[in-house]
Image 1 (cartoon, rainbow, N blue to C red):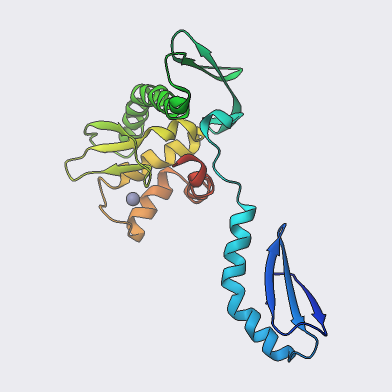
Image 2 (image 1 turned 90 degrees about the vertical axis):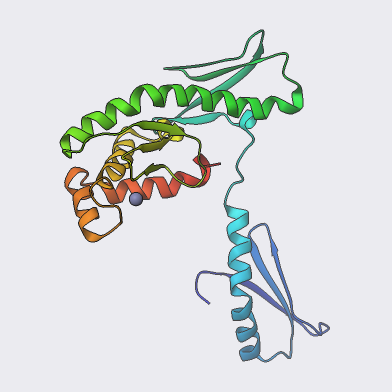
Length: 227
Ligand SMILES: [Zn+2]
């Protein structure tokens, strides 16, 4: 029963055990005469539910796009601002990302369009930058590069097909360059090993010594980015 702190109170009048979570605290109310061993076993049974409920409370919800004030650009959380304008546009500079939404867009569709415009912006960027990066890294891995495509997936950062096609998620423009390089090296290494065998990881490590940190970075940010 480590990790979870229970606030247990006993009452003479109480007949049943009550378990409640309020403000991140776990409260247990129990009859004064209750067998402590029984209570301990009962709480053990509830542990998974308590942990899941606490995790839900402590993980901040994904904000609607227009309620965000920061956005990741190449791994940096920069200011995110938006305003209504005659024409929609996205501009990224040293001050952050500035989104203009056309006044023609209905209020209920604004959030949807905000995401779409950001996606378009980064996709365009990715189509310019990722083939160049893939080319540079392919030369290092002595691989012949096939077509490079950019896509919108919620479950993966990239792919490598049998025909040599490499695919990359547009959201890679939001991750730091060293993490982006890892994803490209990972997919290029699949041109040689179509699996995740020790030989595959050895090849990845050879060209990306910090691949474990890169994997950890992606894992830490995937809920935020792949939504
Ligand atoms: Zn893989």
